[in-house]
Length: 334
Image 1 (cartoon, rainbow, N blue to C red):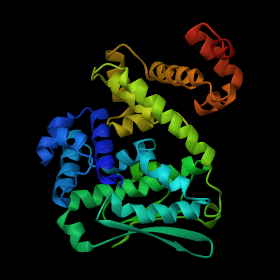
Image 2: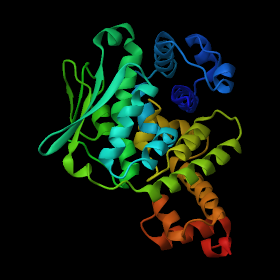
Image 3: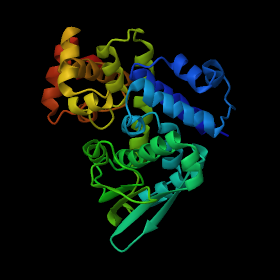
């Protein structure tokens, strides 16, 4: 059986690297042998070790919202799990039920339950208060992560931007605005509740299985593109890799990227200027890489690629592609 805990931890480490953290050091501080994690497909870790990993990741990134930002960044990294959910689901309600069954494969702190009301449904993440007290870092970061991943993965399942009605979390929020930006709804402090509430209309929506095939292809292409990049750890390179791995549906805004790297938009602009590049130039690099990889596969129409890369007009994409390569998309694929 697939070791989803291991896959999740590797994704977490991959995100930490994007944040400028040395993965080996993070693992050493947390009592994890990085090589063993990479090679041993059957490995399992004690909850205390996972708690330490979350705690050290937040400390080294200087980001108390590390779990929240990790969830925002993880659309593609979650595909190993999302793929299985999509393949066995016809509707969003099916997908959420299957996701609930798989949640314990990632964490032993939470269980997921769907409660349907007259006009809205609520996704509850149930937990043992004793475990939450014993493993505070894992509890808080995983609660943030699970709340975000539900909203953002539903985007991919339905090809639309989902806006929940409300979210509840059982602790004080250090940055209310950031929580509400990422979760796209009011976030309320509740005594013992981790939940997301959404309109019932989404439950009967069909899951776009063809969309999953496109996600799989993109994931494969991004993996190849990342392997071809050098190990340079500049902010430019880290943002490039971050955008590349989070480019599905739309390219991330400059403000969201700055928040994810736990710096202000102005600081991001200043640091990039020192490296001789602008954010828009990095976006162009990412779009060029993805466009070439997509069209090289000859599996998708030019208009589909244009849409995925965020172009509202096909003509704008054609002009951009010719500027990048000297050829139109049709000439490139001929």
